[in-house]
Image 1: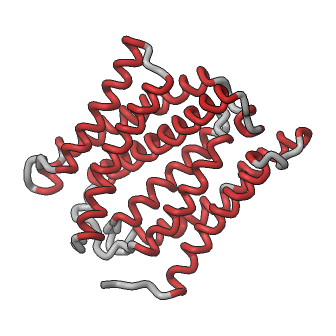
Image 2: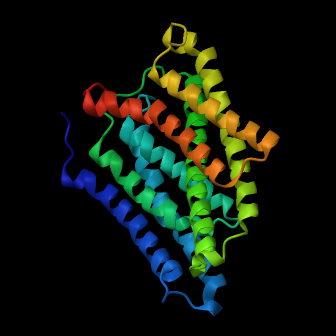
Length: 282
């Protein structure tokens, strides 16, 4: 078993602490009853928005060093996979904040990113993935990671919607929730994210089937990863269909989104965790 020394772990710990420190700062200034001053909100948001680039940049450098090997192989074990998905999640969230009011999601995205940034230090990738020298496989992996990231954002977004709806019923809204868009606007954005993720998930499953013969020398295997990936696709397809035909929204959208995301996690991350961590197979 490979173990890392303190010097190897330290950069990952610093990265996680940067995310966690920023998350704590956001919580204290936006969610705490005593936090925030009305006149400073606009400038405050700009500082917080660009402050994310510090841990995000360090996260990207650590991932690049950990995933890309000199022999052109990709070390994408469970630790690097989780970390890469959350890095893309933070990047997409950060870019999306230029076009949509997503600043309320910082309190959810940053703590999750803090944990994910440290995961490669605990579960290092010991062997490169096979066939990663092939361009089609690299494209397949990139599309799959982007799909995971979009559905991660959708899941966090739907949790924020559920919290907002509950607080509206209770009649108590923290300042951070008061600054969010109306629920209908958040719901519309949610389904845009799900549509984008669904298209990428469709491409992921299709490319996996089409190129399986080229990549692995055999037809696509009907295993747990395939089953859970297909189930996730079906769940999101039914959700989008229900939205179009029956106007599904609110708690129905919350349940279906989280169910589809759970299936997706079990499809890849769950299977890699079982194989690499529990069974000890790289």
